[in-house]
Length: 145
Ligand SMILES: *[C@@H]1O[C@H](CO)[C@@H](O)[C@H](O)[C@H]1NC(C)=O
Ligand SMILES: *[C@@H]1O[C@H](CO)[C@@H](O)[C@H](O)[C@H]1NC(C)=O
Image (cartoon, rainbow, N blue to C red; front, side):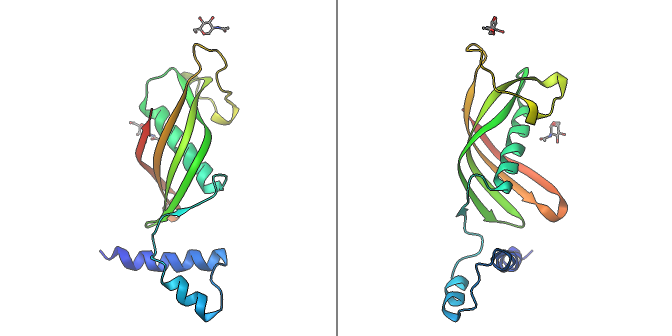
């Protein structure tokens, strides 16, 4: 396998579609010096980041035996790296909602717990790998405390 080639091709694709690639020769030289696949800071309200945060919390809910569902409450930092698709690295907070897992509710409609006994906020670091053309995602890393 030659992952470097895929990274390069994807890197220039992203640069083109975001319009960052200037026709100016100097900036092209500069851009080509940027190593493809280097993690970049991305806005925490970016739609891809929000989706990655939701994938993370779905994974969390799937892997814990809390009666209630947790939902993402705040993404404090987001990085994205091009790795055969996009890999997001997120620092986020998640909170326990009033929705019970057994009711299979839509997370969008779940409110956070206000009851002091049940209220719970966790800080998480997650890595979410999204492969858009395969409509696949994975959450290889998820740490919450
Ligand atoms: C939830 O867990 C099941 C069984 O462990 C697994 O098949 C499924 O892919 C998981 N879903 C998510 C979103 O992680
Ligand atoms: C908060 O939750 C606890 C545990 O379920 C319950 O016993 C208590 O009555 C709740 N308090 C309020 C104010 O709803």
